Image 1 (cartoon, rainbow, N blue to C red):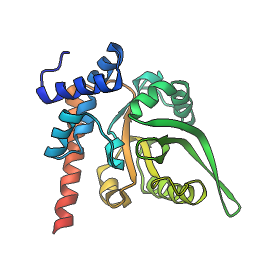
Image 2: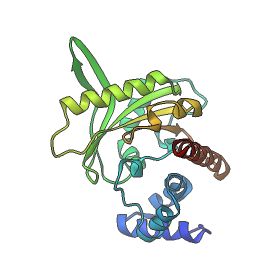
Image 3: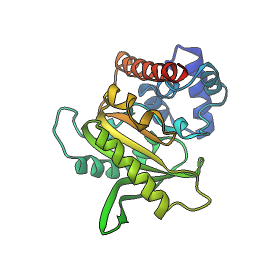
Length: 232
């Protein structure tokens, strides 16, 4: 493997053995910087755990990545498209999308309908994680993340919990996939308080190491600022 960092190399060795990755999939995980994308939300002990045990999801944040790399869906990053087209492209490449989501995911449905009073609401994509034993609701967004988007996914999760979650299921996770995630929106919203609502950026191309480093540094800065303010 062309991986110089010792800890990163150990992680890929463990994951390849545990998950029976073929060479093609191993190369994709390396080239999409899987270790770095998981690394961003880990403390020192968490990083060491990754290099000893590989990816071992135990809580909602363990299964969330940022960014998600969707180069396989075939939509050029320079072209204007609609959210429904993004959804259709994901469904057409569902196997690759499940691999990008990570461990333990099964597809449940698209445009899942929920009724509240006399109105109907539709969730773009619904998955179930067999390791955490919970549903994952994905809301696809073209453009910048807004407070309205966050309020919508929060409402979807609450409705889904009431209408579909069983007693044996753990709390439902809501994830907004957007093309641009504004830091201020994240900082001053329920995303900083909820353990089950998240927003991640998606990229339609393979990022360079420098691009990904900038993404991760921004995320870590947000987390650090939030923790500092919380402790004051």
